[in-house]
Length: 257
Image (cartoon, rainbow, N blue to C red; front, side, top):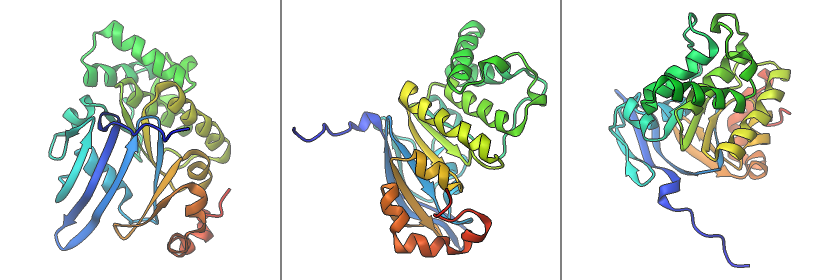
C-alpha cells in the first residue's frame, strides 16, 4: 500500500510559533501544532501552563503577540472573534454561560443564527441536529435554568456544533463532571468526530477522557511545548511525568483511569 494522501491545507488548523506576552510575562512561548479535519488533539499541561490562553489566542479573544493561526488556508491572526467563528472555528468555555431564560433549543438556535446568519426555521433545524448529536434532543423544550452541570456542558457543545464548525475547540468540557458524566461525555465526543467530521482540540485535566479520546496529545508547561505524540508515548514521556508529579494527589496525574 502507498503512503496515505497528505492532508490539504484546506482541511487543517495550523498554529505556528504562537506567542503571548502579558507585560513582562510570556504566557505562551512559540507553540506550534496542526489539527486535521476528523482528528482529535489533546492540549494538556499543569494549571497555568497556557492551555486556555492558547485557545483564546486562536479564537481571537486575546491579541497574539506573534505567530500565525491558519485555518482552511486563511491566516486568521488578528481577526475578531465573530469573524473567526463564522469561518469555521467554534469553541466552548470553562465556565458555561447559557441564556437561563431561554429553552435548551433556543440557546442553540441563537448560536446558529449568529454564526451562520440563518432564518429561524433553519436555525431550529440546526439546533435539533446538534442536540440529537450530543444526545439531549429530549431536553430541547426545557428551560435552561433547570439543567444539571453535565447537561449544561452538552448544551454548550451543541451550541458550538450548530455554528457548523470545521474545527471545534473544547476548553475543559469535563470540568466539574462526576465519573458517570465523564462516561457519557467520552462516547459523545467520539460520535461528534464520526458524524460531523470536524477536527477537535480538547483541553482537559481528566486523563481518562484525554487518553481515551485523543489521537495525539500536545503538552505544555510554563507556556512551552514539552512533548507531543500518541497517548501511549505521552504517558511514558519523562518530561510529562515530571510536570504532572504535583497533580497526582488531586487525581489529575497521568495514571488516572
